Length: 153
Image 1 (tube, rainbow, N blue to C red):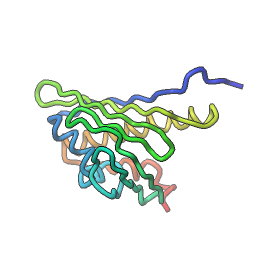
Image 2 (cartoon, one colour; image 1 turned 30 degrees about the vertical axis):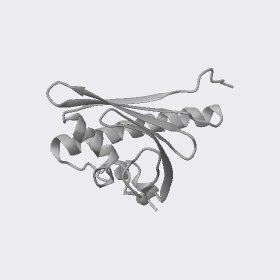
Image 3 (tube, one colour; image 1 turned 90 degrees about the vertical axis):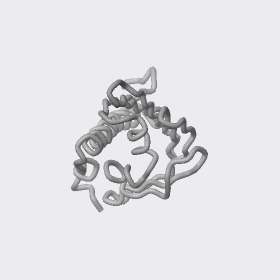
Image 4 (cartoon, rainbow, N blue to C red; image 1 turned 135 degrees about the horizontal axis):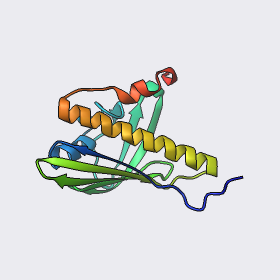
C-alpha cells in the first residue's frame, strides 16, 4: 500500500499571446469561457458570488464560489467539493500573458487524490490550449467535448 506524504498541488501554465485584460476577461465572462471550457454558466464571475457551471454534453454541473478577484491579476474559486483553483495572470512584453492555474485541496483516499490530480492537470492544460487557440487564432478546438466523446449523455 502506498501512502501519500503530501497532497498533490496541480499546476498548468501557458503563454497566451494576447493582452492580460483580454485573457483575464476570457475566464470572467461566460460568453467567452463557453467557447473553450464549460457549456453554460449562471453568470459572470464576481467576488463573493456562487456561479453554476455546466458541461451539458456530460450531464455534469457544479456550483463554484468565487473567493477572490483581483482585476487582470488573480482569480480564486472553490468548487462544491472544496477543491480550490487559482488563476494568476502575469503580463509579459509584446501584449503577452503567462497564465498559471493551480488546483489544490483534493480529498479522498490516496488513489482518488492521485487520479483527481492527474485528471485536473490534463484538464487545465486542455483548457489553456483551447484558450490559446481561441484568442490567438480565433479557432474553437472543441477540446473539452472531444476529449471523451463516448461519455456524452
